[in-house]
Image 1 (cartoon, one colour):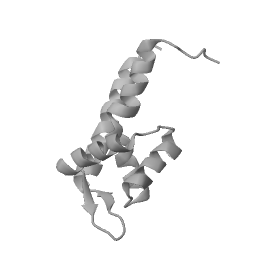
Image 2 (cartoon, rainbow, N blue to C red; image 1 turned 90 degrees about the vertical axis):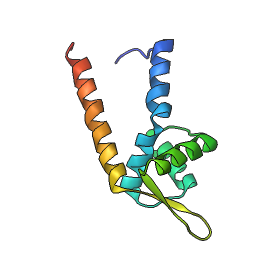
Image 3 (cartoon, one colour; image 1 turned 60 degrees about the horizontal axis):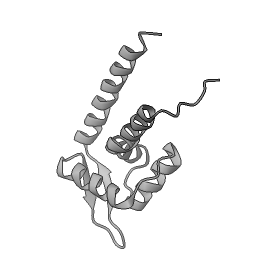
Length: 110
């Protein structure tokens, strides 16, 4: 079993992968679960990935995704939900391919 790294570099990597590209996790959840409210998205991300998301930060991510046409807001009573668009699904798939390619390049050493 590998010893857990306590380096700041590793912690920065985790932060970037878990928080700075949060839109990937939002996309995954909406593809998997369908239309969800912001609180439901937050809960799913925590349940599935163990990532605790600040609600205000999640709102800003949702807003940017909506502005870019990756998701759409469905007005509802009592709460609004969000669904992924075809463009959002395509962007998610492109991101996965990109990440897989980079990971394969990095793994060539092993």
